[in-house]
Each structure stands twice: as structure tokens, then as C-alpha cells.
Length: 392
Ligand code: NDP
Image 1 (cartoon, rainbow, N blue to C red):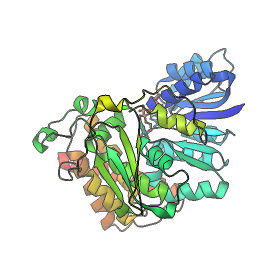
Image 2: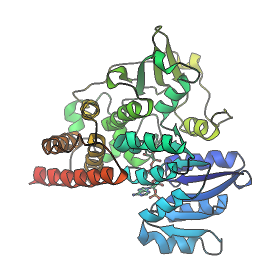
Image 3: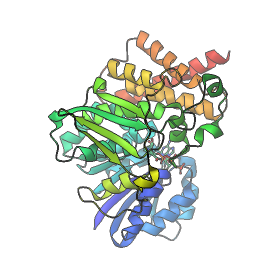
Image 4: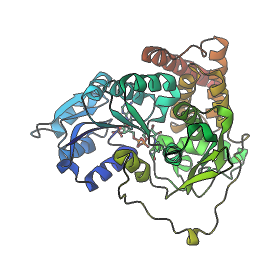
């Protein structure tokens, strides 16, 4: 039986993954080694019982007793904390889903690669913070990383059977989010509730807000660069409000291969789960005659500075991605807590990058997990100081 583990099982990607596993026979067909979650221990325990997992891990030590109680009598092992997550990732499995949100997903995914497994990577922060390290670790252990982000899965699929040397450019699309047509004045007053209401995709809270600010697309620009090894000036972002074309690959002969599909993450997750085969997934089939026209427009760098910041980060290289992501995560926390406005998020990230750049530490190579995590902590401290200074 194929052994699988799912990190971030209780989240949006995690639940969609379990939905597909269930449709493909669940515990009859898959041996679930580990499932992880955060505070939603009731759902985690329910999932672990359904898939007859060997272990369930909550990221939070204060949730251990609740998880243990919810698993009582099941024979499923309970564990808690960051170290337990890493240990769970080291347990042998043939396919591991990395779908924890934020930089917290980096260490478990990184450690999973050492078993030479297949890592389905939804956690884009891993490549943004430590791309070269992650790709080198995968190569060293003969592990396979499969992209789960819809745009990157689309590029990956468009490249099947193609000569990588014939790729001229990659275009990733962005819906533009709920604020695509908003003015800067409107953006300045945007609330978390408005930011979370994505027009096309149903996703976790944090990535939904990142989509509204275009920080999600900024992370994806860096992710494209790291995963496919394409030079930044050959990666473009195109706003496509309908979210039907997920990405396009342009070749040297002028051909442009587009990947189209419904806005349903079960396509990209299913592709990674069944790769290199394709299997039936329950996503809606497109009726192009009904859709009629597809709309595209250029992104507005003035209202959405995140893309410009991502290009600066790619230019700097080194640990700039780790700093960028950490600063963004802190700014997002403060926006969700209503302590800062929507537009302040990018201003804070820009301040943090400027400050750390002045300290000459961003260009250092992401030589080890510890070096990356140290930059993550440093940028978080710096972002908190920037937020406090703005409030004073
Ligand atoms: P969710 O917020 O829905 O779920 C996040 C998961 O991570 C939950 O299981 C949550 O547990 C767990 N978690 C939260 N904080 C921590 C922590 N500190 N340590 C360990 N686990 C934690 O996120 P999504 O599913 O939307 O996104 C997951 C990842 O996939 C992100 O990196 C996102 O950018 C990426 N992604 C998501 C897409 C989507 O459509 N949702 C599309 C493409 C990429 P609990 O809920 O129990 O607290």
C-alpha cells in the first residue's frame, strides 16, 4: 500500500487532499503514516480515525491533551510541538503533502526530503525562504518535489515532454483578488473581512489576504524562479480575473502553451497525488462557449507594490526571500488584528528589507536550515520594531 503523510491536514489544502484520498479508496488504498494540524484538534482526530493514521501531530504543545483525549481508544499515537512535526516528517512515507501555512512549513518539508520521498509542495514559503537549499537537498537524496500551487502545477504540466532550453518565458496569472479595481484610497480603508473574500478561489484566511494584496503573487514569482530555475526577467505576471488560465509557457518558436481549468485546488493536488499518471478528479469541467471571452490585463504596480518588492528580493538573492516572507507574515498578523491598514503591509515589508539590507546580511547564502530560520527570526523582530515605530 502507498504510504502517505499530510502536513497541514486540517487546512484548506489538507482537507482537499483528504477528499481526494477518500475518493480513491481512503484507508483501504492508502496507509497514512502521519497527519498534522494546528489548533483544530477535533478535525485532526476525526481525519486520523477515518484514515487510520499511525500518528497525529498538533503543532501546539498546549493542544496535546485535547488531541490525546480525542484519539482515546483509537490506538493512534498523539504528539505535539515543532520537534514532533519534524520527527513525523522523518517517518518513511512514499508521498508527503507539505501544506502547513507560513514559514512553519519549511522544517518538516525539508526534513522529509532526506528520505528521498516525493514531496507535494503547497507551502510556497519553503521555496521563497530557502529555495536553493531545498532543491539541493532534494537532489542530494533523490527526492522529487512536485508543485501544488495551481500556477506552478500548470507550468509543470505545460513543460512535460518539452526541452527546458526552449523555454523563453513563463507567465503566471493572478485573479487580481477582491480589490483589483479599488483605488488607493479605498485600499487604505480595506478591512480583513473584505480582503478575505476572494472572488474565485476558496482558500485559507492568510493566503486569501495575500491574494488581495498581491503578496501571494509576489511569493509565487519567487517560487517560479526557485522551482524552475528561470531568470526573473523571463517571468511575467498577468492579471486574469476569471482564474481559468493558470499559467502559460512561451517557447522560442513563439508558441504559448496555456493551462486552463476550473478554480479548484483539487486539480493541482490530484495531479501531484497521481503523478506521473492522471486520474479522474471531481473538478468542474469548463464550458468555454458559455465563458465566451477571457480577459487579461497588466498588474498595477502602484496600487500593489508587492510585485516590485519580489523583483528586488530576487535581485538580491541570498536570504532576502526569508526576510521578505517573515516581514510579510508579521505585517499580515497586524493587519488581521486591525492594528495596521491594508496598504501599510507593503510599506512595513519594504522598511524591513531596507533596514536589513543596510545591515548587509541579506546577500548571505541560505547555507543551512538554521541560517534561514535565524534570518526568519531576525526579520520578524525587525518587522515588530517597524510596526511599533509606525504606531508611536
Ligand atoms: P490554512 O490556513 O487553511 O491551513 C493551514 C494548515 O496549517 C492547517 O492545518 C493549520 O492547522 C496548520 N497550521 C497553522 N499554523 C501552524 C503552525 N504554526 N505550525 C504548524 N501547522 C500550522 O492554509 P491553506 O491550506 O490555505 O494553505 C496551506 C499552504 O498552501 C500555504 O503555504 C499556502 O500558501 C499554500 N497554498 C494554498 C492554496 C489554497 O488554495 N488554499 C493554493 C496554493 C498554495 P489548524 O487549522 O488546525 O490550526
